[in-house]
Amino acid sequence: MKIFYKTRATAKGGRSGLTSLDDGSLAVELAMPGSGKTGANPEQLFALGYAACFDNALKHVAAQQKLPLAGSQTSAEVGMGMTPEGGFKLDVDLHVTISGLDQAAAEALLARSHAVCPYSNALHGNVDVRLHLTVA
Image (cartoon, rainbow, N blue to C red):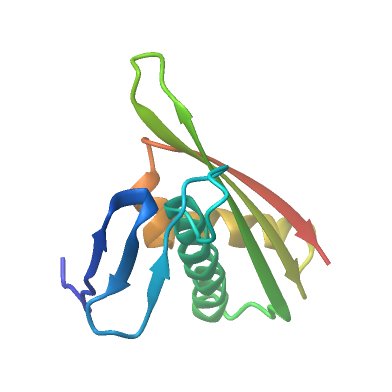
């Protein structure tokens, strides 16, 4: 596989500390859900990245297939739960709105984008990802 680029982030203090990109462009204070501390949690950061990546995958696939995509919006809901074995696992719902295509074309675009998106590929077979489509 040809790597286009890599980025690096460093966390100090785990879920109640600070995480930052090593290039200095972003730093985020972290807080455990329900702790009362101001800050984001890793699932929120993952949701931000997945939503942006998937929305771009829609645009990429639509351009490749020369589809008249008028617009798209992706929201990622990321949850975390405990497995029966006592470990933790993510759970994802992607809510996608597509405009400019009919239902069948939008469904095909959604499926192909899910196969192309690197976040979807990283989770495939490991995390439940449910796709929800609205055609506007």
